[in-house]
Image (cartoon, rainbow, N blue to C red; front, side, top):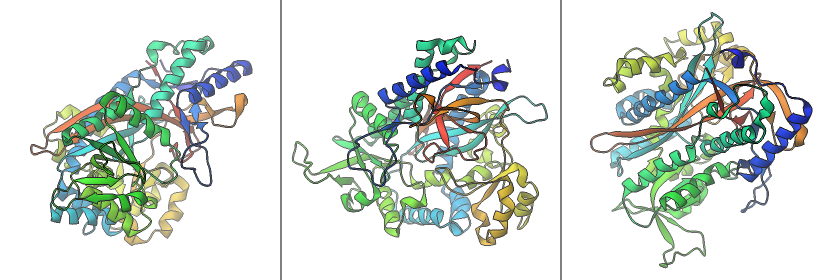
Length: 506
């Protein structure tokens, strides 16, 4: 049925809207759907929290497209693992000599250190990916059925897995406690799919920890200074300890610059604990099995060359990287574009079924590089600007250029920097979708109704890179982020979106 895709959310009188808002915000605060508040300088220990931005109703997604997204994740897991293991391909596309790295300093810094590490000899062939593939519903005006189109594939710091689970639980609670006041026949338990992403992400980390196969080791989470989205990470830490008996240590790049040490003969990575923290056996250092990056995806995380050197030090060790530098490079927008070219997909999925490759291709919008055919790529972007987005090699939201902003941007873009950008046809989301968006500080009258666009993300993990290049992988959960329709960007942490969940429709 098309009704939920053209007329959503159901109307509510103010009394019911206020009651739902109060239930939602108190549930969020009670169940860890929270952020640290904005502060000039975060104290060492949190003293208060705010609820994460949230949607009051789940957003409708056709059941067939939700199932398709989960199926696609299994294929994408294998694809990006194989891309990360293909050094020649990454050198050509992302390297400093032929690819993006020669014009994009951030990419070049990472690639140069990876090349040096290869020259030295890689100590740990295994790699772990915690992935998220993001999609929008596409409803072109030519009458074609609504389809699923990929926005991007994330290979580093794929966040909000834990809080997305809390958000799905929130909407299930609102249904169970109020029935959403019988406002829609689609709001029933069978249409609210379970989301257990925390267990899935922790499982991937635990499998890598097990593959490292050494006693008394810990997983390192590399975090940003002043991280506000800390609880999304802490839920994984608690799951690892409670379900897998794996301990975690959290440090920033600044802390790692002085605490991290790699033994030159064994390549074992150890960290110094904070002063005064001595283990029961008297040790003041711990061995690391897995390095999980929740930082390092933006140039802001590397204010000096020494910060890149710290990243390389971690990669030089025997600890399994999540992601490794090549896997981070594989997540570049340029790789996403190159994969759409004729014959490239077969390089990595030649053994896959034709139907699987066809499904991947059907999930892509048209893309090209701005450096394509000399000035041809720029000319095409200028001529079609009203239906395009330009993307650089960046993650985290707030980096893209849209529609009418494209021509003046192209006027100012030096020709030498074109290779760092791709053009992608805009996905056209369905009309008539709305929601009530709730941000902290609004009280019971803080639910703001808006026309919205919802982005579906599917999580997966892959452990790969052994002698036989086998890829062990799994699809493990999902998230929904919803933003006002007039907002081009979609990052929750960047302030553009709210956390949401799914109501399945037929």
